[in-house]
Each structure stands twice: as structure tokens, then as C-alpha cells.
Image (cartoon, rainbow, N blue to C red; front, side):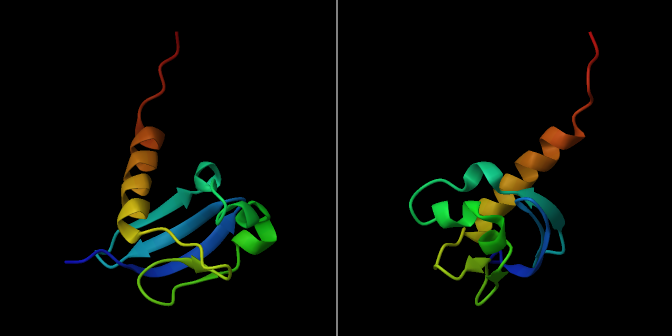
Length: 89
């Protein structure tokens, strides 16, 4: 199965809730991913929150997008970090 984004909703800041075609749902924080010439305009939150899913991934008006596999791997990584137990020393 090819990984695709079925649905996406802007949450806040640079966070997007993403539904993948395998049924998994994640909130992805893209704040640290907005580097490089094509992504710089998206640091403006008003531009960031205006995206569509024309094919199989999120795309912004300026043509910027992320591969669905990249978003999935990032979501799994961020979810793993968020679910690790906090250790108090």
C-alpha cells in the first residue's frame, strides 16, 4: 500500500492533524521543518494554515509540500518522543 494523506486539519501554531490512508491519525508539529526557500513563506501562520490535499499529501499555495512518507515517519518519531515517560531526578 502506498502511503497517502486522506484528510488534514489545522490545529494551531504549526500543528496539523493528519489522517493517513492506513487509518492512523497523528498531530504533526512542522515548526522545525519549515526551512529552505520554498518553506520560508509558511513561517507566516496565516499562510501555513491554508493548505489543501490535491493528490496524496498536504500542499500549500506556493507549491510547497512534504512527501506523505516523510510526514508519517515524522509523526511516528514525534509520537514516540511524546509518549516516553518523564524521569524526575
